[in-house]
Image (tube, rainbow, N blue to C red; front, side):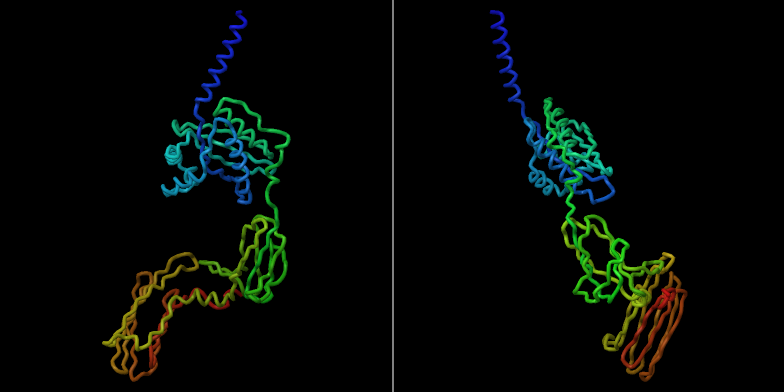
Length: 381
């Protein structure tokens, strides 16, 4: 009799325990970004793998509800926030967590260690702001299932087994290594093309027809072209270099780049010309007057700003034209006058430290220009 009563009592207690368990509401969890702390963006692909496996495990677990991503993004849009900003601002994350009704927020980070990955996941309690952190290191999918097991036990008190031999696949080898392609467009004829510092051919000379580099492994690569007296000029020091570009090649993608390499003298001409104006007499107002002001400031080869302000005031009476000019060079003032009678051509040429001023009056117009004198044509030889 006692044994029967004991058996019945056990059944009743089991039913009560099961009913109580059913009455407990499931905990709600929202995912924040999984950040790549590695220096190389080539391993960004691991974010999707890590998040995907954790999301599958946790959304399948009894007693855990995962907040729908679209619902979270809708709230963020209303608040004019980005998902990445929540990972940086814990206070804002807690606020958004309460709005969407999440009990916990999950954020993660990982570091690629050559043959292994260190994954760290942090749970943030929206109510108490307390955190719990879990870490695993390895190369297989099972390190992520292990993290899921720990999180589920923390939430529900139940121990589950998600790791298995079948899930021992390497998450590192899941990377997409499909080769990409680089199409290099250039107007230069027969410029040498270097790919990762190895010579691979010559430019086509037709900007519409690219030089194509096939079977490029995903990752960072450098393309460079070399042709005598052509390339880029680095400022402010004015040094001369081959054109080159570093780019991230995506798996299976075709990347188009355009080489902006020009003759050094052409570049030097543009850099040395600070101001150039040609003002026809018809631009004068009805009273025969003209006023102009220009800022021709520049940064010299030592990296210092040279402040240059130029003002022009002109008066025309019949064939007579009088011009008054004021030039401020690093707050030092210089004044100049120029007059033309009966339409003759008159010129003025002045050098002031690192610039030269040229002015001219002819039959139809006033022209003036300011040039740098610390840059000269052919200085790259």
